Image (spheres, rainbow, N blue to C red):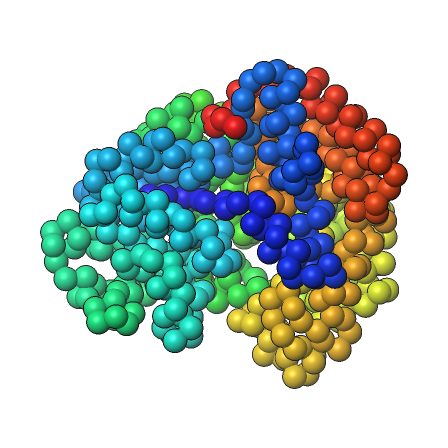
Length: 534
């Protein structure tokens, strides 16, 4: 099971530059990278090089050290189906281990696509496996395949499937049963055309077999953590306790793809946490889209963690509008909540209504206040340019962030997903285009990128978080390395000033001074070694 391939940052940079200097892609790229010895690179890569210069230790710090949950989950599931399976988290960091595994000529190599929005990361993985284990059947599955094929295996999709180069694909929003059936069939030499949810290519054209929706039980499919080496997991682990989302925000099609909200039992979560704590895990990242929904279950989970007293710190997505009393915040803090990802999206009530967020900015204000009072790190994620957005609504969001002061924040232009509910009103709203190339009656994607740049400078009460190979989930990873939020925040503030000065083309001595300050801050840290090397 191969988890994540982050690709080449320089190729990503070139792609963003080709989109044009006023594009959202370019705006996002230039606000999330640093320059080290003349080379543009992601924040953590520059951080690693500066650490190497200061310590002589070639540690490559990367969030991929937090083991890819999809790879772990599917490995555990396949083992439970009587198969032998091994996971790889980060392709670029574990090529020696992957090469050793491929030398054993596995019957099947499965590639997950949890974080991919295009096919670019997949091709290099397929080529790598083909060269080292030609006899292995390569299957690709996950959200990328499901998204590509939502309208069928069209001529365009045919081209994309051939370009990725796999032997087969699984199209199913869950897909673990289909993957297990495929593995058994390949090992036995059976015809995969008889399987469900498999795209194969019998006569130079990709064909989808019979569709059969899966509904896998989260309790029965819970990860057998004891089957993994504690050294492989490390101090920070991701954990899922729910599938799908209870809400239907108009910019998001995830609930449509994932089906009804499905929950694991509190007792299943208890067992998993006990096992993880016994393996030396210190930080748990709950990846559920709305961990504190339903509110009653959230309180039960918190009370369970307080009762178990396992010494775990936890992080999650959190919906302020559903934390309706002080007890919810108190229980979160007492149970070990260290940080929360807040999908704020906007500080303007009109835009929030357009998004069908079912929340008001007053609820966000109260929620951030209560979280900050309890010492819980807060990260506010903002979308700029959703239909109804104007220069004034952007200013309202700037004011909101400066007044509420979440620990961290980031904004980026709306990504216009043509499968999201808002596109059912595209004529009414004047939506033209999709992805990062769009316009509607109140804004264009280029204007949204410009406003996001303005926010980068105007929000002063909160610290910007980079996106590329960082995001909110770098906080628990770095905490596991001994770099807590108190020490990380000054580094991020300096790097934000550095990025801003560079993007504004400040005088070279100003940029050089900030680079020196950042390097000194990085050199003065005391960190645990990284698993990967530069």
